[in-house]
Length: 74
Image 1 (tube, rainbow, N blue to C red):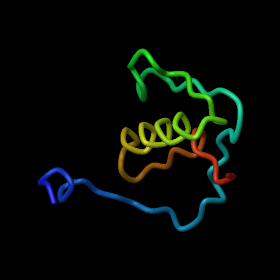
Image 2 (spheres, rainbow, N blue to C red):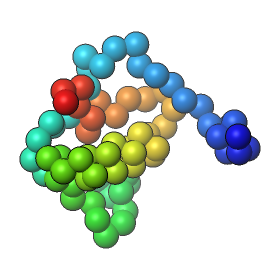
Image 3 (cartoon, rainbow, N blue to C red):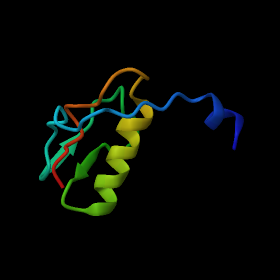
Image 4 (cartoon, one colour):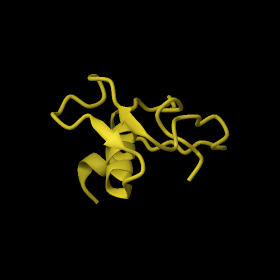
């Protein structure tokens, strides 16, 4: 395990009920989360969906929830 992985705090929510982000359509992430050239994600495309979730979860500070961008719905 890398030193970064050992030092990173991972918090799992007790429930996904509060995650109310969109489950379909296009999602544009705010620049403080995704500052790259590809910041619009097609949530119907699995690769885009997974990349968007990865970016949201990675940048979200420990102790907070990315509830407006992540959906509990498949």
